[in-house]
View (spheres, rainbow, N blue to C red):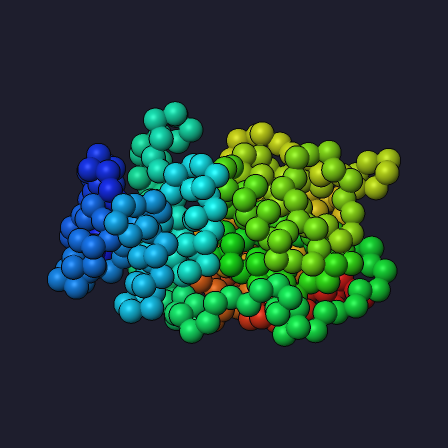
Length: 353
C-alpha cells in the first residue's frame, strides 16, 4: 500500500475549504489531513500534521498568503499550490507567489461553466501530485536573496550582441515556466530576434505576466492581441484564451490567434505554435521547451526539427518539473539540452548563425 499524499488546505472561506477538501479527497492517492482558515492556524497544523503539500489562498486575513508563503519557504520549505482569484490583483499576487517559491497555482473553481467541476478537480489533483514530487531546492534558492532587478541581471549576464538575424524563436513552458521564462529573457538583449511564447496560464493571468516581464527585460514584451506584425526586439506572449500561431503575410509574418478547441488539454497549446513554426518558418526557426507538466510541445518540436529548425530543451536538473522537455527529448525532438542559466545564450547563438 503506497502512502497517500497528505494535503493541508488553507483558505479563509469555509465553503472553499469544504469544496477543495472534497475534490482532493476523492482521489485515491490523496488525503486531506486538515484545513485551516488562516495562516496562524495553518502554522500550527503544519507542525502537528506534517503535510506533504499545501493549498494556499492568495488573499487571507491575519497574515496574507504572500507573507505566510515567504516565511514558510524560509523556515520550512514545502510544495505549495496557490489557489487564486481570477482578478487583476489575484494574478499579480499569484505571479509574486511563484517568485517566492510557490510550486504552481490554480484559479478558484468557478460556476461559470468554463471548466466542469470534474475537470477542475482533475487539474487540481494533477498539480498536487506533481508538487509532491517536485524539486524543493529550486524554491529554496529564493530564501537567501531577493531576485536581482533587471539591471543587475543584465550586469550578471553579459548581453550578446545580435547580428542581423532572420531567425524567429519559439518557446513553450508550463509548470515552473513563469520563473524560467523570466530567467531566460533576462539574458536576452533589446535587439533580439522576435520571440513567440506559449506559457500555460488562464486568460486573466497572461496580461499581468507580459507586463511583469516587460518591466524586467530589455526587449519589449506584449500579450498578443492577434494581427501584430512579427518584429525583432519584441516578445509575444500568447493570451490565456487562445492558441497562437505564426502566419505569412505580404509584409512578412503576423501573429494569429485561434479560439479553436484545446489541444493536449491546453489553450494556448505549445503544439499549435510549434506546428505553425514548422510549416511556415522551417529552418529559420529556433525552438525552446522549458519546465512543465505533461507532453505539450513534444510533437510540434519534432516537426520543427524535421523541418530544419534548431531545437533546445531545458535539462532535468534545472527544471521544476521535467515533463515537457523530457517528452520532447525522448522522441528525439530536442537537439541539445542545457541548464536554465545557459539556455538563452545557446539559443541566441543559434539564432545568430
